[in-house]
Length: 191
Image (cartoon, rainbow, N blue to C red):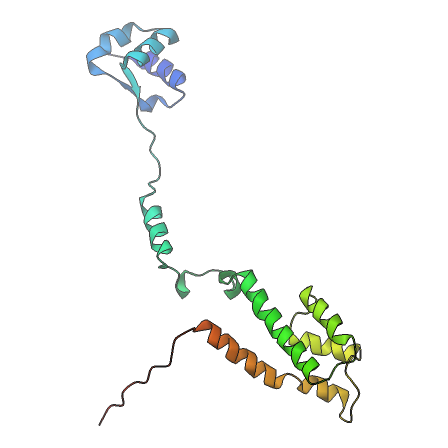
């Protein structure tokens, strides 16, 4: 039985490919008599003509990957793309930078190395994101002559400042990364 016309009409009514149109084998006689779109719509309502579901890409594997990633898996070195900073929140980077800068400024203030009013100016600029790093602050201090004059050479003093504070900042960051984790002593093995 040739039902090409009916398939084409059903496809246009269903807005799909003729390959996806399915006829009920028990109702083929009724389908053969249907020669208008209205007839086809009636048969669709009765269930004599139906539409095969569209084939798509399964989400099973994608969902599985998503579940694993939610557990913290599949995030190793081999799965990474982009810079290291792409995997670190921007806020965390900002916090580390601003804390180091503020500690450095406090160190300068405590040791009376800045001119009056310079601390406030530097602090506000630091808060506004003006400085990229501690080295940038040192450069700014040197260029704008914000150090108190002393017997030492200004350039030498401004560059040597903050060596101790750099070590302290590293120690603080290490403590923050490992809160409450005490170093466990491993038993010595006898030979």
